[in-house]
Length: 302
Image 1 (cartoon, rainbow, N blue to C red):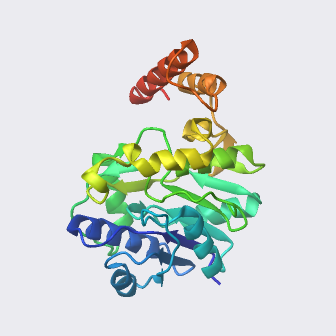
Image 2 (image 1 turned 180 degrees about the horizontal axis):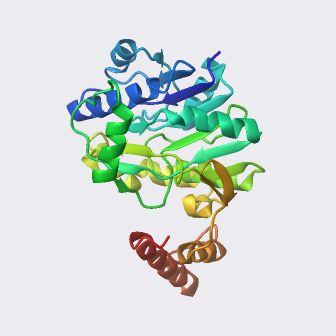
Image 3 (image 1 turned 120 degrees about the horizontal axis):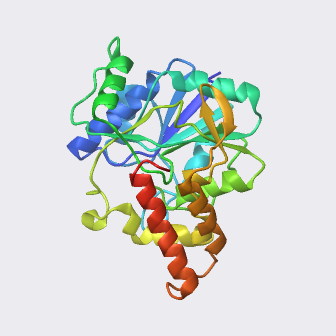
């Protein structure tokens, strides 16, 4: 039986660059080892062909919203039904993982019953198919150290957890902002161990544009993003990695250290209400705190 199931819902493979980076990502998951299975969910153009060529399993049917976008709830349900592994890893389809991912996950699974692993990513420009021959991980790691940039604290592009967690997810639209923030919120509010894996787990995002969205706009300003926020329960549930109380350092789970950015984020949560109309003293204070926190993040003081 497989020990880890990695699942994702790729974009159409019709765009040349998207085709390259998604194939790179899937191949990196398969390189983790024979104890890992890869599930690709959806019927986007080229997905069935890519799954067959790369040796991944394919689940074509998934429920969608009226806009035709796959639902996060349906994606997670499909993966859980198709997998026998105790550990599940959802990831965006442009994310590269290194082989040590499995060993790290299994160690945590031995030590903790209910945990959710997530974290920051390194952004890297990748334009060509990667060479997954001997030494590929060392070459990629060196490239990340030379050219990669750690993405600012925000949501997470991946979630690793035991299969019995996240069984009740709202009908979020995948590929739009907000749903991953709710996933962080849910992990914090439940009696689970929520862990920022950034210090120990290098995760690489292959940069791309947003041509696949209507008008090519960033997903933060997409109409379905606002719908996701509404389904989540409003801005009060839009948690970030700053809200995590634990982190993984040298294989050990420890409390996340305090920083100015974390203090500002704590104050933000205290000011946030279910309905804020964008005016008044409370709103101005909240907006000012967010600007200061983001400035600290850019300065590396998060």
